[in-house]
Length: 94
Image (cartoon, rainbow, N blue to C red; front, side):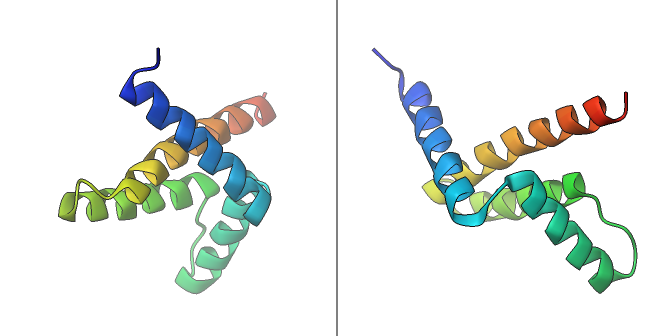
């Protein structure tokens, strides 16, 4: 029998898969956002920094309403994506 935390993480995995279908490859999407933010701000933003900023956004929202499920789902999804980006960066750097 699954615990509530395990069931929540399975839900997060489903949402991540759905969003991948909707928006395409997450790493590519974060790279595209980083390029746009770099242009807007006038200095280089990395895909990992995009994810960290999006995490901060969701955490700020959770501070206002800790019961908001969508924000909690997104925090988990962004944390997983940050790990994925770190692994990709480490592999490419070798």
